[in-house]
Image 1 (cartoon, each protein chain N blue to C red):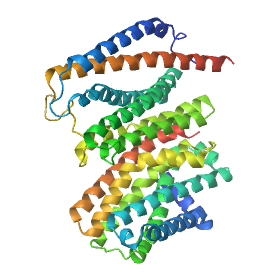
Image 2: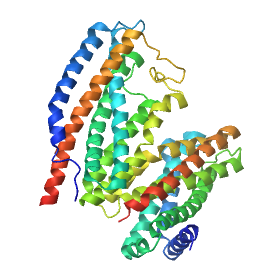
Image 3: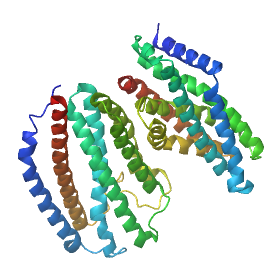
Length: 231
Length: 222
C-alpha cells in the first residue's frame, strides 16, 4: 500500500516552528483580547469571550470542511494519507466544536440569562457535534482499514451539509443568537476596527493551533498506518 | 437493461420479499400506532391535539419506522446471502441503493397512511388542507429513505449496528424532520403557503440526498 508522506519527515521538520508560531500568536491574541481591544458599550467586558468563541466556531467549520475534502481525496485516490487527514481533522473538529458550545454557553449566561436555550444556532451546532461524534464512532467500530476509511469518507461527505446549515440558521429562523458580524451579506463587518483587528489576530492564532494539532495527529496516524502495513 | 430498469427490478424484488414476509412493514406500522397511542397518554389529549406536537411525534415515529424497515430489509439480504450476488451484477450497487430507496418509500407511504389516519381519528385533529397534507406526507416519505439507506449501508456488518444507525441517521435527518413537521402542521392549521414552502424544501432534500446517495453509496458497499 502506498503512503504519500515519506515517514512524515516534512511534517516533523515544520512542526516545532508551527508550534512556536501558534504559541506566540496565541499570547499576542490573548493580550490584545484582554487589554487592547476596547470594552463593548452594551455588554461590557463579557463580550471579550467573542475572541475565543468566534475562532472556535471558525475552526469547527474549517475542520469539518477539511474532513469533507480529505474524504473526497480518499474516495478519489485511495491514498491513506487522506484518511489520516480526515480522522485528524474530525477529532480536532469535535474538540473545537465541544469548546465552541461551552464558550457559547458561558457567554449566554450573562447575556441571555441561561446556559442553554433551544434556538437554531445552538441546536444545529449541537447536532453537528453529535454528527461528528457519530463519524468517530463509525470509525471506531470498523476494523478493516480500507472499509473503515471508505465508510467514514462517505459519512464525512454527507455530514458537511450541516456546516452551512449551522452558519445560516440564524438567518433562516427567528433566532436569539446575533446575526453574522464578520461574514455579512450586507457588506463590511459590523465591528469597531480595533475589535475587528483583535478578532482577525485571534482567528490567525487559532488557525495556527489547528495546523499544529493537525501535523501532530496526521504524523501519528501515518505512523500507525505504516505499522499496520508492515505487521 | 437501463439504470431505471435495474432500480425498478430491485424495488419489485424488495416489495415481493416484503409481501411474502411482511415483518418489516408490520413492525413499522405497529411502532407508529403505539407511539400515536402513547402520545395522548403521555402528554394529555389537549396537548396531543396541538398541530405542532402531533406533527412532530408523527414524523419522529416515521423516522424511526424508516430506520426499522431499512435495517430489516438489509438483514433479510444478509440472512439469505443475497447481497453479494446483487452487488456483483453490472450496475448492481447503484440499483441496490435506488431500488431500496424506491421500495422503502412505497412501504413508508403505507405506514404513513395508516399512522396518519390513526393520528387524525384518535387525536381528533383538525384538518384544514387535506390535499396540502397529502403533498407534504408524500414528499416526506420520499425524503427520509435516501439518508437512512446510506447510513444503514455504512453500518452494514458492524457490531452495535442497531445503536449506530440512529446515531448516524437522525442528526442528518433533522432538516427533513423540521420541514416535514412544519409542513404538516401548516396543512393541519390552514396555512397553504407555509405547507407548500416546507414541501418544496422536502423535495429539495429528497433530490440532494438521492443524487448524493447514487454518487457515493456504490463506493461504500463492500
